[in-house]
Length: 141
Image 1 (cartoon, rainbow, N blue to C red):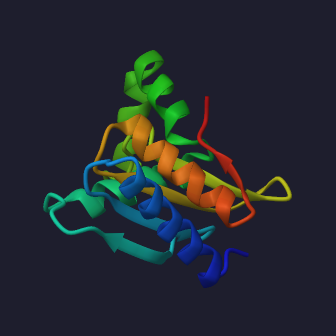
Image 2 (image 1 turned 60 degrees about the vertical axis):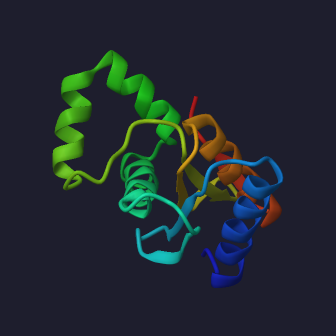
């Protein structure tokens, strides 16, 4: 189970990394395995819907069982399937990097979605946060 303490470490570390590397302001959403929000943090000066995009990156990864980098590949290879999956997920699936599964002992215990900078930087911040919590990041391939 993903604890609140672990979720806070993930979010705080992701934002710390973003400030150290001068990323644009981020929104971070950490979900547990059920898709419930454990932590939502949005930095000053983010755009209006940034947290919703972060949620959709995490929720989409969790729903499909694959990091959002894999979902991006799927969207390129099978656009009709991803469009249908997006519909089933009520639009909460953003197929670009930045949605990372959280694993412990091989099991998915949650997901992190980050939005605000480039997708690769969003993903790097998510991975740093997950690893700081002593968990395994699965961004997809």
